[in-house]
Length: 398
Image 1 (cartoon, rainbow, N blue to C red):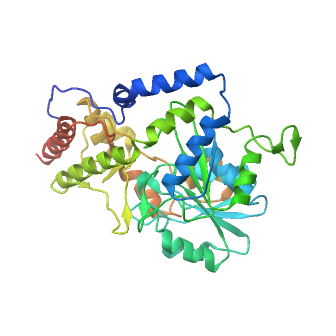
Image 2 (tube, rainbow, N blue to C red; image 1 turned 45 degrees about the horizontal axis):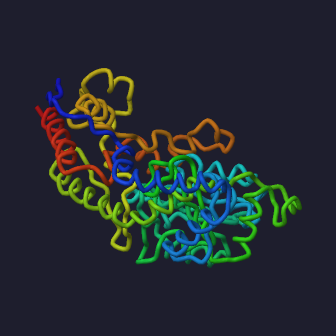
Image 3 (cartoon, helix red, strand yellow; image 1 turned 90 degrees about the vertical axis):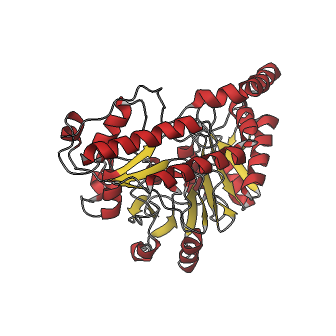
């Protein structure tokens, strides 16, 4: 039986927004004070300026902000006329909203398993899922690693399908040098506070190179209005407010620097984890520029979380749930993204999927563990995380 070593150390959370605020808080406070003094809180030049800057950063001509990443997906589907009777292909290993938005427009999510290295849609299985009712593909750039967009776009073009990129976790990532969000008909971004580019509340945005799609997105986000009080269709109330827009405008200036800091932390983690038995470091495709929204390792799971967290694991080697518990006891935060794949969620029981239908997604859900990852993670913090992992690996081997 193994026990964890005692390490009287400081607490390192999985993410830490207060450190970012300490660095740029004065800028944020000055900018938000100016917005408050202006009296213009919804729409206006502040929001337009952020949209213009973001479009330029992502290499697109149009950027339409909204109030969340979920609404970005919802609005994009609506703007592309996808609805009841249509099928949309996406991943079973993602945050629920990727599939939820499809359901919200009345379409049916069709799931395709992931490839095991990068946690993204397996392009080799994509064409087999296409039917006469398929209208679009939503590839997810999970954890900050781009999906294989060149292959996905080729398949979509061959079958006349729309592509809506879920870029919620990958702002600033590129595939073959091209920014995510600029490949498909639309790119959908989330500015949830913990994202690589995060607001101080909810926020989202849709990118496109199609001015007609952008025009419809602007109408849909404001109750289906193109002219005030004249409603062409049923829309949403989904606008980014000026306070969030000015915060995001400031943070956008730091995005490249923050992503580079994440990459440096990931490199150090990967070098160390290569020598730790029981852990598998995440892979990076040679065509991808990974921005490390999460640093997610694989750890074998016993498959019995309740037992594993209440007693030291009785199987040889590290076990995911025991490891997470022991890291927490030593002050190192971690997260499991995601413990239940989309097809096994109760909300989608009517689709008729069952355990075993998507084995790679299910295996990932049993094995993934995301370590602390934020730009302000110091070298000492990184060393503490690595030392804790090494010590726990030694403990279970004795």
